[in-house]
Length: 174
Image 1 (spheres, rainbow, N blue to C red):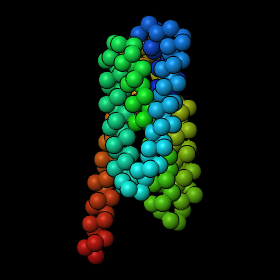
Image 2 (cartoon, one colour; image 1 turned 60 degrees about the horizontal axis):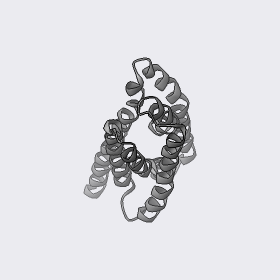
Image 3 (cartoon, rainbow, N blue to C red; image 1 turned 120 degrees about the vertical axis):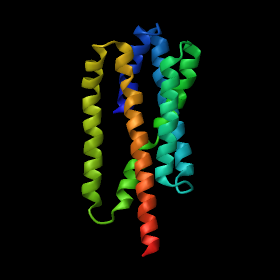
Image 4 (cartoon, one colour; image 1 turned 90 degrees about the horizontal axis):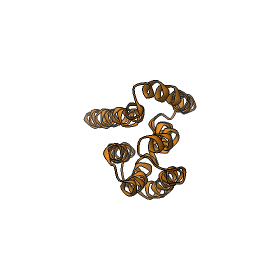
């Protein structure tokens, strides 16, 4: 949902609040998708070398930090550069979640994948409505949905790392 807010609402936000023209707003989103492309290549190289949950946490923290900096930055040039880092952060979170979900449980992975894809599509479908609702409180409130949702993912990632660590410790003790 957080990625959808950035990918769909950021051009409107930057045009109305940061006075970007249409070309600058288009460049901003192109840089976001460039960051995602480059990030997926980098994550593909790192996958297998770094635990999936740790990689998801690192990407979540990168995107959260970049979004917060983007939120407060007033410089157009800085915003363009920061948007690449937002894309880098978002780049492989979803593919890694799918990969992790499909390998965690050997039996019933089809059902698990169905739930993961349904959850993702539910988030994508509800993001525009939530963004519109928050835009009633102001444009800054509407774009703040992205870092709030990313904070939730950071907390879930930390919880998953703690849980899997405890689970691994329990299996070693047995």
